[in-house]
Length: 66
Image (cartoon, rainbow, N blue to C red; front, top):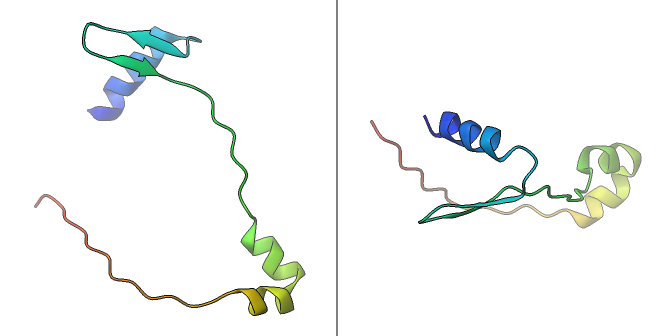
């Protein structure tokens, strides 16, 4: 249902980046990000990959509706 509502809003906004209602300001903007390609770096430079990686441990708490 959430995705359906988001798609309805996007369809109404068309190419606009912002929209307003009585209660909300809606922003739908393009975002550009750069990601480090770990798989390519590992395959091209295994020695450096091993030298600069470390193992960490953490506990994750997940709560779901039954």
